[in-house]
Length: 153
Image (cartoon, rainbow, N blue to C red):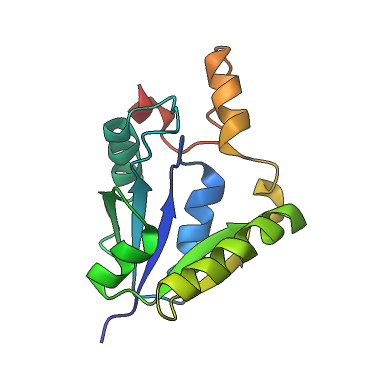
């Protein structure tokens, strides 16, 4: 049986750090679904469609990765798709503190859905989407932080 994990997020934009987490997860899981949350209360820089196209373009040759969107609770998507594991990347202890709380809530709401944590590669640990958005807004070069950034425009 194919073991599938879910990697949820807003991915505004999807960075090389996110990409590295997907590759690490593929060492454990047969398939990773990257789930873009449709969050109407959150203002994003890149449209949902552009973010989906961008991520799909990065993994276009990898049939073990798919990209989907969803509006609602992540655990509801997991239940609908019979997914038992959520993957998350950790850069530092602040990430762990935040993600641990969400993992506990998802476990309770999802009836046992586990969160599997992967450490971000050291050379990518300073990258976060907020900083990349600021660089982009100010016409800076984001090529070292984002694979195929031209797909975002």
